[in-house]
Each structure stands twice: as structure tokens, then as C-alpha cells.
Length: 502
Image (cartoon, rainbow, N blue to C red; front, side):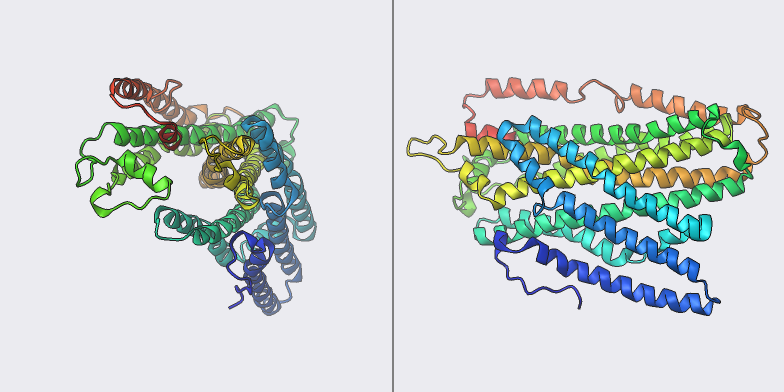
């Protein structure tokens, strides 16, 4: 009921801010309802107004983080426009500017989080920080709905693009909704990061109590605590690296499969016995109608199978490391070192997650901004002799497409995965906390840490041996074979085909 707008479906002429306001009304209504019910509960529980203020701080913190994320990822504002402007000098400057935007977006987000943590700690201590996480997650239902809206709009645009019978106006509308979806998805990730930090801090406090640690022994100057912090700060980078590399390998395998279907699949031929999948793709890209007897259905199941198998295979290492790291650090060295590891992981993970999520969303919307301001359209205009009428616009748009390609694993894979990492490490540590309270000094029962450490080493060796963890290109042989087949083919690949395949 609250999520409604008077904006007409005018494609890129639609006001993105007005569309965003339609979704924000639903979030605000959910927040107001929650605050009312929370006030009633606090009153019935004997006037727990300190906890109520912490809930209010958490809710306000989440909404402010959402607006900060919108500023850095919406093409209505300067950060995304600055990334698009860097496209004039090529993809390198687009990538550099996007990284800079992602890094600077950490500043206001972390400042808001720090203020919320300090305020809640001053009011109700560690319990106040924990209850603030409840407040931030109070609007989780509507937040998840707006987060899921982005992929729905994106897929709707893809379907509209694949069907030549759908007019360009429909694709224009879905593109504008997709741009809004990029912002709402980034906003949802901002909520997730903020709540993950507050939740992990609460779990860290619970671990300290369960392990019966003396606070006076947890000084940052303690070499064991500091060593744990350094090790924990490294883990989000390792986790992000593994997921990024995994996306690259899976994408390369799918590209090779698509190329193989273009060139080396005689079974993918139309009823006329001549038209290939490559011909159909070129005809569709040129806007030409494809008669039923000339249509070729690609083997999309093979691409889905590659993606699915790769996702399961490549998640073995990150998932195992996230569980085993707290186990061997806690049992081998001791609980104080583990506290340092958790603190380092929370701090580092929050920074990297915010940077990756916001940079990815900004890169994506920089490409969308090229479509809105006409850069994409001008990049396709040709002269009578077939040459590009605006070659600079083509270079500009292609540079932003490269940025979008880099940003997708940033915002859709590595960034969100770090929220899981810091919460999973905290939960594993809290689970083993009762076993660690017997430690009176470091390395006291170090032999307990040998089994998880040995499993860590054996698993790593197995993954290296099977080629899952390796610097070698797993599809190098496929590339060489594909190039030899293309070179031996009698036909010459056109520039249009190369552009489509690449």
C-alpha cells in the first residue's frame, strides 16, 4: 500500500529519486510500526526506555547508511557521474575512479556505525549494542524485498532484450528500473554490513563472557592479541580474493563454452540446415526478424551446469577456511589471540565489504548513466561507409562496460560474502568458547589445535593438487584448442562476431 508512485513509465525520463522515494516510504512505514510496537513492549516490561533508545539508534543508523549508500551508487549524484566521466580516457581510469569512490564511501558509513556503537554502549553497555542490531534489522522484511527487486528488474530487462517483438521503449523502462534496482541492492547490502558488524560485536562480547576472559588481559599492546588482530584482518582479503578468482574462472569457462557453440557445434543448426547459432545471434543483434525455420536454440543448460558446478567446487576453500581459522587459532594459541582475530576480522571485513559493494554498484550505474545520457546510442551510429560516426563515444561506453564487468563480482559475490564470513567466525568462536575457558595461559593446550590445523593444511594441499587452488589457468588448454579450431575453419570471423563473443 505504501510502496506506490505517480511516476509514469517514461524510461530514462523517469525521476529516479521519485522512484526511490516510493520504496523508501515502505521502509519508513515499517520503521514507524516497529517503533510503536517496541515502545509498547518496553512499557509492559517495566519501562526499559534505555533499550528503546538503543533500538531507535540502530534503526536510524540503518536508514542513514541506506541514504549514504544511495548517494554513492545512484547516477543522480556526483560519485557515479565522476566514474562515467573517466570513461573518456579509457577503462583504466574508470576502474581507478570506481575504486576511489568505493573507498571513500567507507568514511561516512563507518562514522555512522561508530557513533551508533558509542551511543548505545554509553546508554546500556554491551547489551545496548546488541539491541541496536535488533533495531537495524527491524525493517528486514521490506529491506529484503527492495533488495530482491533489483535482480527481478534486471532479468525483466534481459527478457525484453532477447525478444525482438518487444519495442525498445520497454527495454528503456526496464533499464531505468534496473538502475534503481542497483541502488536498492546496494542499500540492502549496506544494511547487511551494518547489522553484521553490530551482531558480530555482540557475539564477541558473548564469547568473552563464555570463555571467562579477564578484560585486563585483552590489551591491544599484548603481542598475542595484536597477532590475532593482524591474522583476522587478513582473512577478509583472502576470502574476497578466493571468491573473485572463482568468478573469473567460472566466467572464462562459460565464455569458452559459448565460443564452442558458435564455432564447433554442428548439432546447433536450424531446420534449413545452414543457419548456425552465430548467424542467429548476429541477426538478433542487428534487429532482424528470425523466421522459425532459421531459429537455433542454444544449449543454455550446459552454461547453467558449468556455473552450478563451479560455484559448489570453488566454495570449498572459503567455507572451510572460515570455519577452521577460529578453531586452530583458539585451540592452538588461546582465547585471547582468538579475540584479537575476531576484532581484526570484523574491522577489516566491514571496510572491504562496504568498499566492494558500493564500488560495484557505482560501476554498474555508471554504465547505466551512459545509456541514459545517450552515450550508448551515439556509440552505435555509423556513417554511410560503415565507419563509426562517434568513435569517442564508443570508447567511452566500452570503458564503462569494463568497469561494470569488474563491479559485478565486487557487489554480487565478494562484498556480500564478507558479511557471512565475520558472522560465521563469530558463531564458531562462541560455540567453542566453553572449551577455551580452561586456558590460563597461551599455548597451554596447544595439542588441541593440531587436528584443525592439520585439516587446514591437508585440505589446502588437496585443493592445490586437484587444481582448485592454483595460479595456472585451468582453461588455457581449452583456449589453445579453440584458437586452433577457429584458425582451421574456412570462414573468417567478422568484427561484429568478435564483439559478440568477447
